[in-house]
Image 1 (cartoon, rainbow, N blue to C red):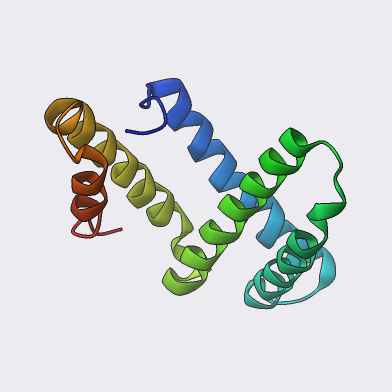
Image 2 (image 1 turned 45 degrees about the horizontal axis):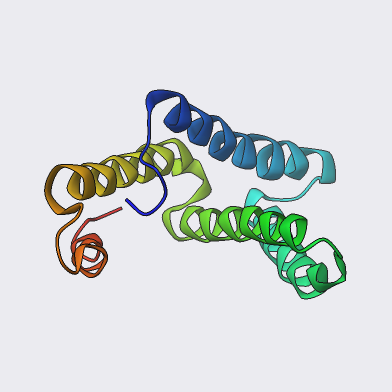
Length: 130
């Protein structure tokens, strides 16, 4: 895989991050704000869009890039949660981690070093359900 592969610690970190996004970013905030989780999710997505429009103001390009990448990951994750339903977030987290494991396995067990390995990996991922 074009990153470095995944180990258990990395997968556990993603689970904790994704669950925290929902539990803190949506569920706790919706309770504090007295609004539905769906409304809070919509607000979070809107805030992320606004923030990404302003990240060009971050002067250090490495810090800007990592900040944008993290925000884009959270934004994409929220969009998947939105489409699958906030109540199903734990299933969504499991499905994404399964996706990452399949991606990793496909690359390192079958494709690494072969001609057009990245193209084949991308095409394979089109067939993996999340």
